[in-house]
Amino acid sequence: MYRQLLGLRQLSRRTISSSARRQIDNTVKDKQKVFQEDNGLPIHLKGGTKDVLLYTATMILTVFGSGYVVYELFNAAMPKKPR
Image (cartoon, rainbow, N blue to C red; front, side, top):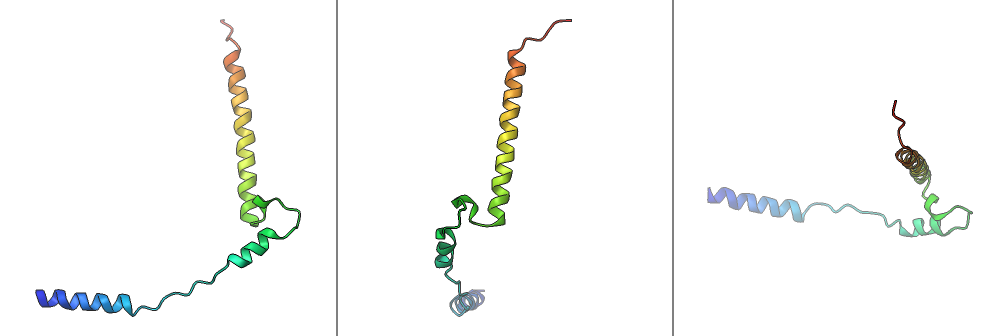
């Protein structure tokens, strides 16, 4: 049993220490160029289509939510007429 544990320990050391490291490209400079160029877009829309979709969805939810709050406040302020 002890011999198996030692073998497992050696195997785990080999796989961790000899595994190839994944190279990650540094894209910070590219992102800085995109966000710092003067193209007339606001900063929250310079990320591309994903940012435009998120912004549009947020604005739609905000307008709808504000309208619904005003509607509910108006209904709460007006007394119900008894029949």
